Amino acid sequence: MPRVLLHTCCGPCAGHAVEELRRLGHDVTLCFSNSNLAPPEEYARRLEAARQLSVNLHAPLIEDPPDHAAWLEAVRGLENVPEGGERCRRCFEFSLRHVHRLAKEQGFDAFATTLTNSPHKSVPVIFAIGVEIDESRFLAIDFKKRAGFQRSATLAKECGLYRQNYCGCEFSLTAKR
Image 1: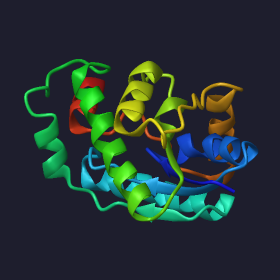
Image 2: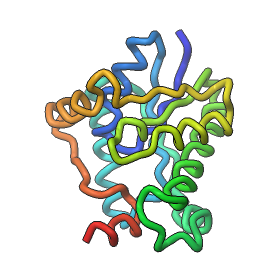
Image 3: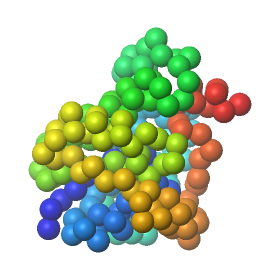
């Protein structure tokens, strides 16, 4: 059974992704790699939701320790760019490169991301980044398909997971207000 490291942006988005990857015959490990999250309390809430989902779905969880300073450097100069623009692309790339590195170091066959479950994220941009990083290991799966977003919302509710109301970085939080 191929081993997949699943970049987990948050617990709610990961539920259907785990089910879908298992349906496709993969052994799934969650990877919480989210250096973009701010403030620290938000990081803690989302990590706890990922831990809860991990327990409920019997999927191991790896936490990639956050490096918010490195993430800020990666998006420097793009702080005022609207959501969905170049800052988001760089953010996706930052996280996916971290997950790819962990996948290689720990012997996973492939990596994927729950970012494609969000109706607010550009799937073509995410796919392009994943393929650029490692075409042979990246699983380009749009987890919104097959009613994935709705299924994830149902699983999140059943598991009592915290559901956030903004993307995660301080810039998306400011834009939300």
